[in-house]
Image (cartoon, rainbow, N blue to C red):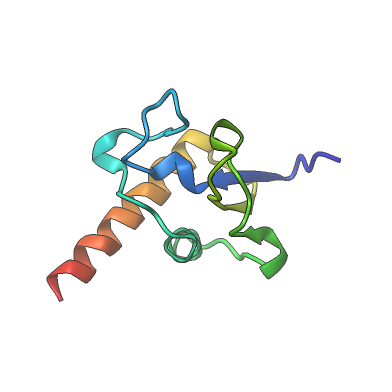
Length: 103
């Protein structure tokens, strides 16, 4: 049954190695190489969302790349549309990666 109160955010949306045709949803400047579920969860939590453990699936396979395990996080819908939410999440992931590199 489809859950209309939440949005699924796949890791492949932020993978810089993928083309838009293969599933990337953000521009390459906002994408990162090989994103991790933990990075995605931290970015979503920093935006003020709460995530239960049952809403995190790190073994799921993105439909366009069914041969590779990717993972996703289910986030409750709020005022933002999905594209605005993806951009906010990707900016946070990029910012966190640049901070961790400079340390």
